[in-house]
Amino acid sequence: MDEITPTALEQLRQRATEIHRRLLQTFGRPDWSRRLSPLEELVSTILSQNTNDRNRDLAYENLRARFPTWEAVRDADPAAVIDAIRQAGLANQKGPRIQSVLRQVTEECGQLNLDFLRSYPPQQALDWLLRFKGVGPKTASIVLQFALDLPAFPVDTHIYRVSGRLGLRPAKMTVEQAHEFLAGLFPPAEYGPAHINLILLGRRICHARRPDCPACPLQGLCDYYQQQSSAGQA
Figure (tube, rainbow, N blue to C red):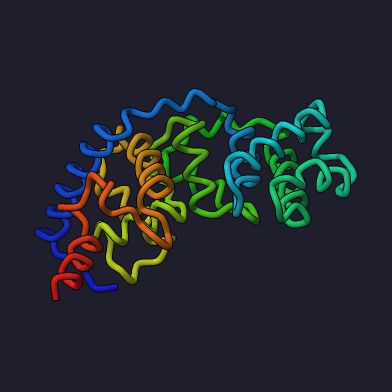
């Protein structure tokens, strides 16, 4: 990845500020009322990998209905957990991962509770979560931002796609690198709203195959739109 000069980085921050402002005008300020505990959010986010919100929620609700406690999930027959979360897809992978995380938390903490991470510095909390198999930067960042009230900027497939098209990040930057880079473009207090509204942009307008550029409020700020417009005029 090419090094970005301080001047170019400041220009990207200014662009990010305007993008955030316009998305707030378009989608409003999001309210994530579905507040979960850190452990609940961790399990829910593992279930969300490679599936949609509806399937994640159905699998999570079924898991909680089937097992009264997280200890019961931890100690259950793996086949029963897999069956409970089948709606989320990749259940044969996610079930053992969830049980493994629950066992490791129990061994290290003596109980199934991650509230202690609230007192950690953000990077330390992130690093602690990243030690678990199946927990990557996106999953760990979601737990920090939305359950621990610690600043983190999760990057999913929608945010990675639209940030590339908008020119908010270098084209060759990896998803893993994008977490820290994009976090540097937005104020920490706005990580949550910016994250959610960029996802909404990707879901509703900036689709993977056929982006609806005429409906986009960011045309003048989008590298992809400018390139497509120039190609159409050529």
